[in-house]
Amino acid sequence: MSKLTHIDGDGAAHMVDIAHKSDTVREARAEGEIHMELDTLDAIKANAMKKGDVLATARIAGIMAAKKTSDLIPLCHPLALSKVAVDFTFLEDGIRVESMARLTGKTGVEMEALTATSVTLLTIYDMSKAMQKDMIISDIRLLAKSGGKSGDWSA
Image 1 (cartoon, rainbow, N blue to C red):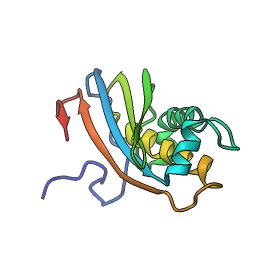
Image 2: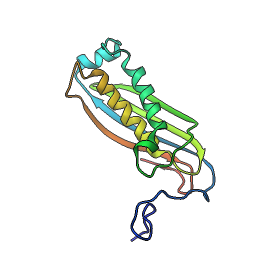
Image 3: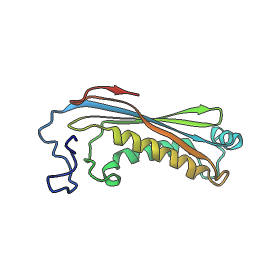
């Protein structure tokens, strides 16, 4: 069995020391979807929701969430992100969210990209739930990561 990086010799959880690692440019992209009825999707597209601009609010929420990932996920390092982007693609029955996080640093940004995507989708739900409560959030996943010792990876 391989050595677990977040467990010490006594079996206790701990934050990994990254002081010895080299700074590299690191980037990660994640995606997810929210599915809904056509009337709900049309209202989002028309910016006709009572709570306001769903996509603008969701984008800001996703960016803010990426910046707060270490407050939400135990053992994540607080990171000085240089870029977070959140983009939307309309689907026939919903919205696809793709988030990107980037920095120059000692550890990866996969959790930041995944957190941005997740909170963006949750915000779309929150902003639209008065119109439809049975929307489905699905398929949240890492699309790609680059940088660091392990190099590049893509789904």
